[in-house]
Structure formats: structure tokens, C-alpha cells
Length: 157
Image (cartoon, rainbow, N blue to C red):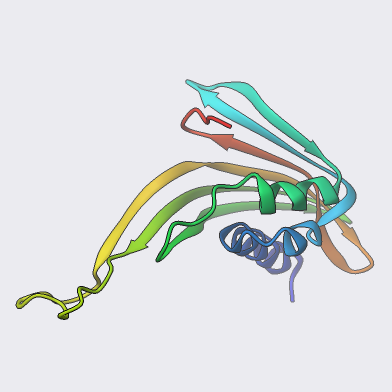
């Protein structure tokens, strides 16, 4: 598999770990001294919102700081249009992302009303921005060394 494809799969594992609120899976994607920086992209001027240092702290944040899913709810991170640069054992990724909040409707006791069809519930975009990690290839595997997240909307923690 090409380095570029391995990097795309690393990002796919990243967004799935976030969607599942799986801190252990997230921590495995980072080098031990990994770093995450989160910014609000205020009209093109990045404003720092937060920073995490160390793969254990990053994993713990996914488990304890991310908002839990509501009943019948889920989130889906999607990434688009990746730009990947590889230079030996270092790499960079620049990808757009959208996070969707998905909440299934509760099926009424008597069943769905007459005329109801298709998926029941709501899907709403809740976050957009760019993921810009710096990557290192260690023992043949790509890992995140420094992950920068640029959010298009301000964030309350």
C-alpha cells in the first residue's frame, strides 16, 4: 500500500475513534509525545482554543471531554479532499471535515404512522473545518505527531 493510502487510512481510524468516543483507539494513533492543538478560524485568523500533549491525555480527552451521544444518537465525521505530502518518514495531511449529528426517531408504540417511509430521525451538520496533522512513520506505520484542528465555528468547552 502506498504511503498516501496509509495516511488516508490513519485519518479514517482517527474519525472513527472520535465517533465511537474510543480514547484507547485514538491514543494508539499518536506518537507518545503527540500533540493536538485546536483553533477557531476566526475569519482567517486562528485563535487557540486548547491543547493536549501526550497520547494518553489525547485518548482521555476523547473518552471524557467529548459530548456523549444522545439516546439513538451518533456522530459521523467525514473527511474530504485530502492533500497529502510525504517526505521520507514525515508527512503532512490537509483535509476538510464535516461532523454530522445523527439522531434516530423513537418508533411509536403503535408503529410508524401511516404514510411514514424511509429513515426516521434527523441528520444535522454540527462542525466543519480542517484537519492538518504532521505525521511520522515509525516502525513502518504512520502515526500522528502534531495534529492541528481548525474549526470554522467557535467552540465552548
